[in-house]
Structure formats: structure tokens, C-alpha cells
Amino acid sequence: MSSIKPIKINHSSSYGMPIKDGTLKESTVSNLNSNSSINHYIDPSSYDQPETEVFTLPSIEKSFIDLFEEILFTLNGIPQYSLGLNSPTQIVKYDDFYFIVNTFSNSILFSKEMVHWNLIEAPNGESFNLAHSVAFDGNYLVITDTDNKRMLSYVYEEGNFIYKGSFDDNGLKTRFHYVIYDKTVDTYYAIGSEFGDVTRTYEFKIKDGQFVGLDGKVLVGQEIKNSNGSNYVNENQSYVRSFTIENDLILMPIHNLNKSSEILIMDKHFNVQKSILLPDSIGGVTCVKKVNDYYVLTSSTDREGHLSSNIAVAKNLEDFANGKFNLVDDSIYKSLESYTGSVEPIPYFIESFNDIHWLTINNSKTPIWAIHVDESGNVNLLDSHIK
Image 1 (spheres, rainbow, N blue to C red):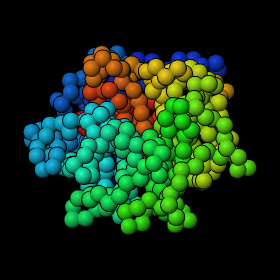
Image 2 (image 1 turned 30 degrees about the vertical axis):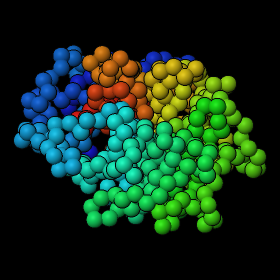
Image 3 (image 1 turned 90 degrees about the vertical axis):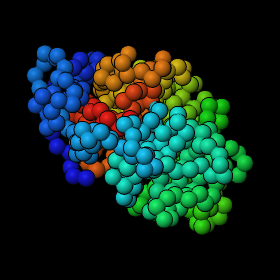
Image 4 (image 1 turned 180 degrees about the vertical axis):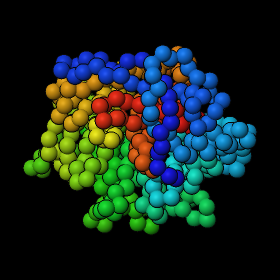
């Protein structure tokens, strides 16, 4: 796929709200108009503000063309107008493969061009149970099968992913949430978390389909450590949904009930180097990711764990603690027309590939978006039409 290129869209709603010395900014949403490179697909919206250039996805233009030919996708070779996505938590690319973790439908999809998709089968005739993420080293695929409290390994053979092994943290039944493969050190990283339990971290490889520690022995989960080797005290009332690897650091947003939530800055062995406390207005954090020149922090609940979504944007991580951030106006992605059932749309994981940053939104009829932050900190969202 080629790089992103601009199209014209209209402005809608105001961006964020003043937070201490933060500034009020404008934002845009994705509504193709008659000046778009693809005409007549969506009628122009009746916004009064001037047009602004934002970014679109070249693969999505191909999908629009396919739609005119009355085939948008194929799933296991069968033409589909929709992939039937139900609150996917992740869309991600490893090597030549794209993956969608279709969480509430308990299915995982893979593709080589984002149009023709295939399903990965759960092992032994079972079903995935709210799987959240995948990672791939070019040979073995790892799936966090979250509510089955296990990680699974698969190998790619003859056009499909074949089940090879399972890991449940030696009977501890950790609720695995997120896994990353880091090619620079040939290592998988994962976390498991559940309120009432200590978050556990994992560094591992896959050998003959089995999960092994970096020492080649049986993989054992570890509690989060301080740089001096002592346990980072965060037990019983904390919850972690994801983390990000940024150069030689791990950035982990952690949702605390007994104190303010925080972003942990860690080395690549999950040792805490620094903690950035977050204001309660951000709530129960989900994901932190650098998008263009800004950090974007998503949250899916309030401090007490009730559904309450936010997207917060800051120039530096420390700015979240200092109040120098903006909350994105949630009307960009949350409207009555967007709801799946009665549960409000919730921004979740952000992944980056093909020069695009991708945001999944749970409980939304438009669950996969491109997210762009311009040089002034304005957030632009574009519906990918992958549904």
C-alpha cells in the first residue's frame, strides 16, 4: 500500500475543552463531499466551516471501488458487504499480514491486502473468548485469548494459521490482554491483568509452538518491578489493558482505583523508571501511543470503572500530569447513530502501519478509524469503512 494522501472534508464540532492552560482547538471529522476523489458515495454534510485537508487511506479507495462493483470484502472466500465486526479491539500488521481481532464476535481475521479476509479457528473445536490482541514473528502467531485466560500459538502453513500450543501461566489463569512482537530483539512481550490481582508481565519466545522464557526455560509471569528489583506496589486495585514499545522504553497506562491512574515509563524488561500520575478527568486509561508529534491517550472508563470514554492529546507525556492536554470532543466518534445497542462507543487500541495510525472503537457501527494529529494538536478521524 502506498502512503496516505489528502482529500477534502468538512469541519464539525469544536475540539476538546480548555484544561488548565491548555487551549481550545478545532477538529474535523470524516465526511466525504463532492470534491472527494470518489464522488457520490456519501452526500456532502451541511457544515458551515471551510474545507480542510486531512488524510485518507489508499486501501479504502480500493474498497470504495469494490463497493461500486457490489463486492466490498470476501470472508473465507464468500463475498460480503460487511465483515461483521463487533467491537474489535485491534487492527494490526506484522510482515505481510493484516489482522483484525474481532473481540465481541470471538473471531480473528487475517488478510494480505485488507479486502479478502480469512478466519483463524480456535483450537480443538472451541471458541475464542473476548480475545484482545495478536503478535507475529514471521513464523508463529500469538493470540491473547483473554477471557479463556490463556495465550495461544499458531504457525502459518499452506495458507492458514494452524494451532500449536497454549499457555495459561502455569495454572494461574492470567487474563491476558495485550501482546507485541519486537523484531529488534526477537522477543514477544505480553501483559495480563484483572482487578483484584497483580498485573503480570511476560517476555518470551515460541519454540516448537511452546512458550519459553528468554532463558529457554518454562515461561513464568513476573510482577512489575522497580529499577532496583523490588516489586512496584500496585496490587489489588489496578488494571492494565495495553502498552507501547517506543525505542528502548515501554509505555504502560495503568488504571488505578485506589489512587490516580498513571503512565509507567519502563525499560524493556518491565522495570519502572518513572511514573506519570494522571488527573482523574482522564479516567480508566486504555492505550497510549505517539501519533505524529503528539501522544494520544484513550480511556474507556471513569476512575471508578464505569463506562466513560475519552481521547486526550498532549505534546509530551509529562503534559498529561501538568494539565497541558486537551480532551477530544467525543461527538466526533460518539453519536446516537453510532451506537451498537445501548452501550456508548469506546476508543480502544491504536496501532501504526502503512504510514497510518489506526484506532478501534468498541460498541460502534463504525469500529475502525484512521487517526491523525496535525502540527497544532488537532485530531482528525477518518472512517475506514471496514465494518
